[in-house]
Amino acid sequence: MGSLAKKSPKDTYKSLLKVVDETNGVSTSVSIIEDGEGTATCLQVSDDNLKVKPQNDNTTTTFEVENSGGSNILTVDTTNSCVKTGTTQTYANSQILEFSAYRLLPVAGTHYFVPCSSGNFASTVGITELACGTGTDPDTTLDAGATTDELVNMLFYAPYNLTIDGVTVMVSTDTDTDTTINVHLYKFTMINAGGTSDGNLSDGTLLASGRGTGVDRNVIKTASATIDSSSVSQGEVIACFVENATNTDDINIRVQVLYHIN
View 1: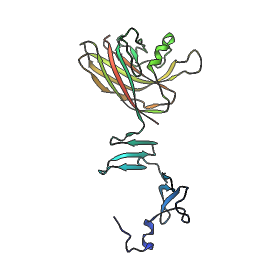
View 2: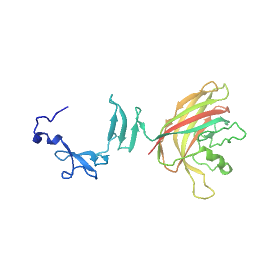
View 3: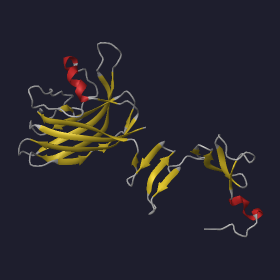
View 4: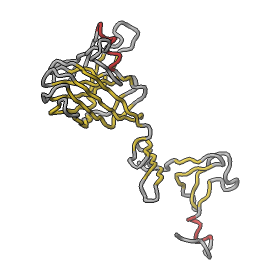
Protein backbone atom coordinates (compact mmCIF):
# COMPACT_ATOMS: atom_id res chain seq x y z
CA MET A 1 0.00 0.00 0.00
CA GLY A 2 1.16 3.53 -0.69
CA SER A 3 2.26 6.09 1.87
CA LEU A 4 1.88 9.89 1.99
CA ALA A 5 5.04 10.24 4.06
CA LYS A 6 7.38 12.98 2.79
CA LYS A 7 4.99 13.88 -0.03
CA SER A 8 3.65 17.38 -0.65
CA PRO A 9 -0.15 17.96 -0.44
CA LYS A 10 -0.04 19.47 -3.94
CA ASP A 11 1.07 16.07 -5.24
CA THR A 12 -1.31 13.94 -3.19
CA TYR A 13 -4.56 15.89 -2.78
CA LYS A 14 -6.36 13.84 -5.43
CA SER A 15 -5.95 10.75 -3.25
CA LEU A 16 -7.42 12.36 -0.14
CA LEU A 17 -11.07 11.89 0.81
CA LYS A 18 -13.24 14.60 2.27
CA VAL A 19 -16.91 15.52 2.72
CA VAL A 20 -18.58 18.08 0.44
CA ASP A 21 -19.07 20.56 3.28
CA GLU A 22 -15.52 21.83 3.57
CA THR A 23 -16.48 24.46 6.15
CA ASN A 24 -18.36 22.40 8.75
CA GLY A 25 -17.10 18.91 7.96
CA VAL A 26 -19.16 15.98 9.23
CA SER A 27 -22.53 17.15 10.63
CA THR A 28 -25.97 15.81 11.41
CA SER A 29 -26.84 15.67 7.68
CA VAL A 30 -25.31 13.16 5.32
CA SER A 31 -22.68 14.58 3.01
CA ILE A 32 -21.14 12.94 -0.03
CA ILE A 33 -17.56 11.77 0.37
CA GLU A 34 -15.41 12.93 -2.54
CA ASP A 35 -11.76 12.98 -3.41
CA GLY A 36 -9.51 16.00 -3.24
CA GLU A 37 -10.47 17.27 -6.68
CA GLY A 38 -14.20 16.94 -6.04
CA THR A 39 -15.03 13.59 -7.67
CA ALA A 40 -17.98 12.12 -5.77
CA THR A 41 -17.91 8.56 -4.43
CA CYS A 42 -20.86 6.27 -3.66
CA LEU A 43 -20.48 7.00 0.08
CA GLN A 44 -22.32 9.55 2.18
CA VAL A 45 -21.71 10.09 5.87
CA SER A 46 -23.01 12.06 8.86
CA ASP A 47 -22.34 11.82 12.57
CA ASP A 48 -24.99 9.07 12.87
CA ASN A 49 -25.55 7.72 9.35
CA LEU A 50 -23.62 5.96 6.59
CA LYS A 51 -25.24 5.69 3.14
CA VAL A 52 -24.16 3.87 -0.02
CA LYS A 53 -25.67 5.28 -3.22
CA PRO A 54 -24.29 4.82 -6.74
CA GLN A 55 -23.35 8.07 -8.46
CA ASN A 56 -23.81 6.95 -12.05
CA ASP A 57 -24.89 3.32 -12.55
CA ASN A 58 -26.59 0.62 -10.54
CA THR A 59 -24.55 -2.59 -10.34
CA THR A 60 -24.98 -6.13 -9.03
CA THR A 61 -22.18 -5.45 -6.50
CA THR A 62 -22.94 -1.97 -5.16
CA PHE A 63 -21.94 -3.11 -1.67
CA GLU A 64 -19.91 -6.22 -0.83
CA VAL A 65 -18.55 -7.86 2.30
CA GLU A 66 -15.99 -10.62 1.76
CA ASN A 67 -14.35 -13.17 4.04
CA SER A 68 -10.56 -13.35 4.29
CA GLY A 69 -10.49 -15.75 1.34
CA GLY A 70 -12.16 -13.23 -0.94
CA SER A 71 -15.60 -14.89 -1.16
CA ASN A 72 -18.67 -12.69 -0.83
CA ILE A 73 -20.81 -13.24 2.27
CA LEU A 74 -23.00 -10.14 1.80
CA THR A 75 -23.87 -8.48 -1.51
CA VAL A 76 -26.22 -5.57 -2.18
CA ASP A 77 -27.41 -5.59 -5.79
CA THR A 78 -28.96 -2.25 -6.78
CA THR A 79 -29.55 -3.40 -10.36
CA ASN A 80 -32.07 -6.04 -9.25
CA SER A 81 -32.94 -4.43 -5.88
CA CYS A 82 -31.91 -7.44 -3.80
CA VAL A 83 -29.55 -8.52 -1.04
CA LYS A 84 -27.71 -11.86 -1.09
CA THR A 85 -26.04 -13.52 1.89
CA GLY A 86 -23.85 -16.42 2.90
CA THR A 87 -21.42 -18.53 0.92
CA THR A 88 -24.25 -19.58 -1.42
CA GLN A 89 -25.25 -15.92 -2.05
CA THR A 90 -28.91 -16.77 -1.48
CA TYR A 91 -31.50 -14.00 -1.43
CA ALA A 92 -31.66 -12.66 2.12
CA ASN A 93 -35.48 -12.82 2.16
CA SER A 94 -35.75 -16.35 0.75
CA GLN A 95 -38.66 -18.46 1.95
CA ILE A 96 -39.78 -22.09 1.44
CA LEU A 97 -43.39 -22.87 0.56
CA GLU A 98 -44.45 -26.50 0.92
CA PHE A 99 -47.22 -28.58 -0.66
CA SER A 100 -47.72 -32.19 0.46
CA ALA A 101 -50.23 -35.04 0.39
CA TYR A 102 -50.55 -38.44 2.03
CA ARG A 103 -52.39 -41.21 0.20
CA LEU A 104 -53.97 -39.07 -2.50
CA LEU A 105 -56.10 -41.51 -4.52
CA PRO A 106 -56.03 -40.55 -8.20
CA VAL A 107 -57.73 -41.45 -11.44
CA ALA A 108 -55.07 -42.01 -14.09
CA GLY A 109 -54.47 -38.97 -16.27
CA THR A 110 -56.23 -36.50 -13.95
CA HIS A 111 -54.54 -33.50 -12.33
CA TYR A 112 -55.23 -33.09 -8.61
CA PHE A 113 -54.52 -30.23 -6.24
CA VAL A 114 -51.79 -30.96 -3.70
CA PRO A 115 -52.68 -29.31 -0.37
CA CYS A 116 -50.63 -26.35 0.79
CA SER A 117 -48.57 -27.40 3.84
CA SER A 118 -50.04 -30.89 4.25
CA GLY A 119 -53.11 -32.98 3.50
CA ASN A 120 -54.19 -36.44 4.67
CA PHE A 121 -56.47 -38.14 2.15
CA ALA A 122 -56.46 -41.52 3.95
CA SER A 123 -58.44 -40.50 7.04
CA THR A 124 -62.24 -40.48 7.16
CA VAL A 125 -61.95 -36.94 8.51
CA GLY A 126 -59.29 -35.98 5.98
CA ILE A 127 -59.69 -33.77 2.95
CA THR A 128 -61.14 -34.80 -0.40
CA GLU A 129 -59.31 -35.09 -3.72
CA LEU A 130 -60.04 -32.08 -5.92
CA ALA A 131 -59.43 -32.46 -9.65
CA CYS A 132 -58.46 -29.76 -12.14
CA GLY A 133 -58.48 -31.22 -15.64
CA THR A 134 -57.41 -34.23 -17.67
CA GLY A 135 -55.36 -32.57 -20.41
CA THR A 136 -51.61 -32.48 -20.84
CA ASP A 137 -51.57 -29.66 -18.27
CA PRO A 138 -54.04 -28.69 -15.55
CA ASP A 139 -56.98 -26.46 -16.47
CA THR A 140 -56.33 -22.72 -16.36
CA THR A 141 -59.74 -21.90 -14.83
CA LEU A 142 -61.81 -23.47 -12.05
CA ASP A 143 -65.23 -22.91 -10.52
CA ALA A 144 -65.17 -25.44 -7.69
CA GLY A 145 -68.82 -24.82 -6.82
CA ALA A 146 -69.91 -26.76 -3.74
CA THR A 147 -66.35 -28.02 -3.20
CA THR A 148 -64.82 -24.54 -2.93
CA ASP A 149 -64.49 -25.21 0.80
CA GLU A 150 -61.96 -27.93 -0.09
CA LEU A 151 -60.10 -25.51 -2.36
CA VAL A 152 -59.19 -23.26 0.60
CA ASN A 153 -56.59 -25.81 1.77
CA MET A 154 -54.96 -26.06 -1.65
CA LEU A 155 -53.91 -22.46 -2.26
CA PHE A 156 -51.13 -20.11 -1.17
CA TYR A 157 -52.03 -16.42 -1.33
CA ALA A 158 -49.09 -14.20 -2.33
CA PRO A 159 -48.92 -11.30 0.16
CA TYR A 160 -46.17 -9.58 -1.87
CA ASN A 161 -44.68 -9.78 -5.34
CA LEU A 162 -42.62 -12.99 -5.40
CA THR A 163 -40.02 -14.67 -7.57
CA ILE A 164 -39.83 -18.47 -7.76
CA ASP A 165 -36.18 -19.62 -7.51
CA GLY A 166 -36.53 -23.42 -7.41
CA VAL A 167 -39.01 -26.28 -7.06
CA THR A 168 -38.07 -29.72 -5.69
CA VAL A 169 -40.38 -32.74 -5.76
CA MET A 170 -40.22 -35.91 -3.63
CA VAL A 171 -42.78 -38.59 -4.51
CA SER A 172 -43.66 -42.23 -3.88
CA THR A 173 -46.68 -44.50 -4.40
CA ASP A 174 -48.22 -47.42 -2.50
CA THR A 175 -47.56 -50.48 -4.74
CA ASP A 176 -44.65 -52.21 -6.46
CA THR A 177 -45.88 -51.11 -9.90
CA ASP A 178 -43.73 -48.46 -11.53
CA THR A 179 -45.65 -45.30 -12.40
CA THR A 180 -45.03 -41.92 -14.02
CA ILE A 181 -45.91 -38.92 -11.86
CA ASN A 182 -46.27 -35.42 -13.31
CA VAL A 183 -46.19 -32.28 -11.16
CA HIS A 184 -47.19 -28.73 -12.14
CA LEU A 185 -46.93 -25.48 -10.20
CA TYR A 186 -49.40 -22.80 -11.31
CA LYS A 187 -50.44 -19.30 -10.39
CA PHE A 188 -54.03 -18.04 -10.71
CA THR A 189 -56.08 -14.93 -10.36
CA MET A 190 -58.68 -15.60 -7.66
CA ILE A 191 -61.93 -13.65 -7.62
CA ASN A 192 -62.37 -11.69 -4.40
CA ALA A 193 -65.14 -9.21 -5.17
CA GLY A 194 -67.53 -9.89 -2.31
CA GLY A 195 -69.93 -11.96 -4.43
CA THR A 196 -70.97 -15.55 -5.02
CA SER A 197 -68.07 -16.16 -7.41
CA ASP A 198 -65.41 -15.47 -4.78
CA GLY A 199 -62.82 -18.25 -4.90
CA ASN A 200 -63.14 -18.94 -8.62
CA LEU A 201 -59.79 -19.29 -10.38
CA SER A 202 -58.79 -17.88 -13.78
CA ASP A 203 -55.74 -16.92 -15.83
CA GLY A 204 -53.82 -20.02 -14.80
CA THR A 205 -50.14 -19.73 -15.73
CA LEU A 206 -47.51 -22.47 -15.52
CA LEU A 207 -44.72 -21.61 -13.10
CA ALA A 208 -42.85 -24.92 -13.08
CA SER A 209 -43.21 -28.58 -14.05
CA GLY A 210 -41.44 -31.82 -13.25
CA ARG A 211 -41.74 -35.57 -13.72
CA GLY A 212 -40.86 -38.70 -11.78
CA THR A 213 -40.52 -42.01 -13.62
CA GLY A 214 -40.25 -45.49 -12.17
CA VAL A 215 -42.09 -44.34 -9.05
CA ASP A 216 -43.25 -47.07 -6.64
CA ARG A 217 -43.39 -47.75 -2.91
CA ASN A 218 -39.79 -48.98 -2.79
CA VAL A 219 -38.27 -45.63 -3.73
CA ILE A 220 -38.53 -41.91 -3.15
CA LYS A 221 -38.05 -40.19 -6.48
CA THR A 222 -36.60 -36.69 -6.28
CA ALA A 223 -36.77 -34.23 -9.16
CA SER A 224 -36.00 -30.57 -9.70
CA ALA A 225 -38.84 -28.98 -11.64
CA THR A 226 -38.12 -26.80 -14.65
CA ILE A 227 -39.15 -23.18 -14.02
CA ASP A 228 -41.25 -21.83 -16.88
CA SER A 229 -42.27 -18.48 -15.39
CA SER A 230 -40.92 -17.20 -12.08
CA SER A 231 -42.97 -14.07 -11.35
CA VAL A 232 -45.98 -14.06 -8.99
CA SER A 233 -47.81 -10.81 -8.29
CA GLN A 234 -49.27 -9.74 -4.97
CA GLY A 235 -52.82 -11.09 -4.63
CA GLU A 236 -52.36 -14.04 -6.98
CA VAL A 237 -52.58 -17.59 -5.61
CA ILE A 238 -50.18 -20.48 -6.14
CA ALA A 239 -51.38 -24.06 -6.57
CA CYS A 240 -49.56 -27.37 -7.02
CA PHE A 241 -50.94 -30.29 -9.04
CA VAL A 242 -50.00 -33.97 -9.26
CA GLU A 243 -50.99 -36.50 -11.91
CA ASN A 244 -50.52 -40.27 -11.89
CA ALA A 245 -50.18 -40.74 -15.64
CA THR A 246 -50.03 -44.56 -15.39
CA ASN A 247 -52.57 -45.98 -12.93
CA THR A 248 -54.59 -45.34 -9.76
CA ASP A 249 -51.90 -46.06 -7.16
CA ASP A 250 -52.06 -43.79 -4.11
CA ILE A 251 -49.60 -40.88 -4.18
CA ASN A 252 -47.43 -39.61 -1.33
CA ILE A 253 -45.80 -36.35 -2.33
CA ARG A 254 -43.92 -33.38 -0.93
CA VAL A 255 -43.09 -30.30 -3.01
CA GLN A 256 -40.79 -27.53 -1.77
CA VAL A 257 -40.90 -24.16 -3.50
CA LEU A 258 -37.99 -21.80 -2.89
CA TYR A 259 -38.93 -18.17 -3.49
CA HIS A 260 -37.94 -14.67 -2.49
CA ILE A 261 -39.94 -11.49 -1.90
CA ASN A 262 -39.27 -8.79 -4.46
